[in-house]
Length: 448
Image (cartoon, rainbow, N blue to C red; front, side, top):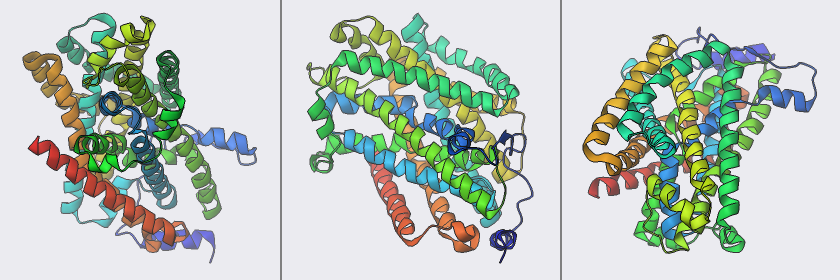
């Protein structure tokens, strides 16, 4: 059977043929050299991984990492590490789904489930995107307050203007957006390299923290933060995003071409997510070295951490770089959140909105509660709202993970690219672990 015939067999496994490309305006728009070297091909496929990695270092992650480092030192580094392993595997499944079936996850759900179930999944995903946007609004507002003394309410309102920035970036093309994201990630990395050097962490306890400890399970307070780290690490909208943007590469849509695309996209994704692991680990390490060892174990929010960095590290540059990195984190997540919203709406509903209108709607949903809480409750209220947004994300995660695992395990849907036996077992195990831990997180949060 030829590769074309095999691809047609895959198509028959779906309820209907996929006649619309995901993000059609940029589909297959980034050129891949046919006879280039390994490095040239890898560079051509590099970019989507960084855009996905942004979701793993957003302001929601900062809150859990700071609390974990301040209270328990380096112990929860192992949780960040294994959460990142989960993320690498799930993002690999997402990119493989996009390449093998030429559907993003939203389109795959629409072509497999009934209209009622598809609509329900769309609503849940929109809630998750709005919750993620809420974290970006709060994170950016806090950063503006720390850098310029801008009142939090004004900072929240100012984030509405990023609609114009998004519109400008999308007009410049997809490769330009990837370059902007990469530049902002570079700013975050440089900032935390400086923070780590100044905080002088203990190397051996830090390395020991990468090994899982029994006390994480048996200490209720530690377990709660550990689950929070997991909930803030694996983002549901990233799975939809990755399954779409991997298709922006212009590779041959044949079996051999798809194998090449999956290979290089997997390298891109893995490297980018290891960068995200470094940033999350760095936040926790700085918190552990600066606060835990100095007796400030009660530091549990971003603003308190910023205030203590200068006197503890002996330099005024540390809190400035901390705030700049936070602002870069929030703006990076804004870029990818807009694309994820567009992918989800078009994939589930076939509704196409102009990017600026889509962004304006999503941002409005996030700004209103953030503005009310900021005005009424101040900084403490925004911290609580930031944590609440991560709980909402945790509640939505399994509704994206379970369909993804089910689709990529199916030989009828994936053909030659279906998960092998070991991957099937691993994928289901991770899906169930995430479900159980996140249900526990939501349960404890509601009780708390």
